[in-house]
Image 1: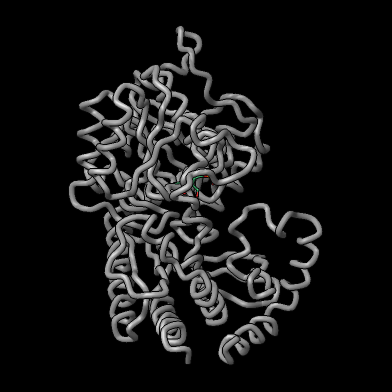
Image 2: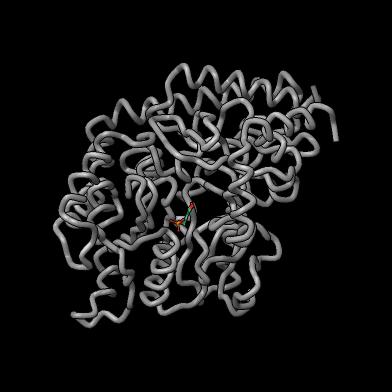
Length: 449
Ligand SMILES: Cc1ncc(COP(=O)(O)O)c(C=O)c1O
């Protein structure tokens, strides 16, 4: 182990004593110490613990050891208004005085639905659920029922949650099967192609001509590497699906209300048949949304002869998520020009600055992203550009990713796997500190000093 790494590990240990003690207990209670596999934040390989967080305020998180971080993970991308935004806190606390959840229809669902329908071009009707994982599962079911076909095409590296329907080709981008306990790949009826590879996409469609119900993809590949679509890619996907009567589902659980108030479909002006949302629309509380044309969604109207059972979920449409989501969307809507300009301009500026640092230090890394989504990918050898998750997965230098994560924690930045998302509360002071920390980290990973 290099000297600098030893020093960084010791520094982290010194500053995270209480987190380390809690982590030890967590190992006894949860497999791998976590209830979400990615929450070890790359610290396990160093025998360290992720920081245990006690509070979030605006752009900052605070841990049990008294450390503070400029947060670019922003609750898996949800907290676009920053942490504890007064409008959301007020909405939740006002609603709490009436109780929590009654398992009954309530007017708050109508209010949030109206805002989503008004803002999102493809949505005529929707259903709420409690997670994005449910939303993509239900969207797939609706598409299969509507087309009376079985196969679903997805992008290699596309993360649509952990449901049994779509949990294929996520990290195991070539082999496809992610977990024991799932159906085999053949039985899954899931097909895949590489993001931005339109020829590969057409090949899959041609080889499965009459069998494909839906294509599901994130308009910008999110967890698969913050990869933007090449010019014309989304348009061609749309054209091919329309031509062949295949349902196009945009999974906008990350990009929904992140790239613009009209989500990625408005940003790129490519309108799918269906959309799934989550994260931002719940204002930091659990939520999932399945939306689409009236005709597709009405299949779920069991009162009128519809035959698709979707929904369910004790906590779907719960008042707290509804009012938190509404407060978020209202705040975004009233400031949409200013907020989205700021988010997207800051994102572009940070990516450009990172790129010049990578050039300056001759780093084996590539920065990707669009709008306020940013990711640095570390490789063993320099790669010019990245356009799919497969390219990343095949070349990723995992050790460097872990080391970069540690360096950033020690410099007061909370990133994950190469960076993350901006929120409207990131100040110019935050960004200046961030760029200094990034320069330090990039230099050390690239040159070992
Ligand atoms: C694009 C995408 N789809 C689906 C999901 C699953 O959402 P949830 O974690 O709310 O189940 C996620 C979560 O990160 C996501 O990024």
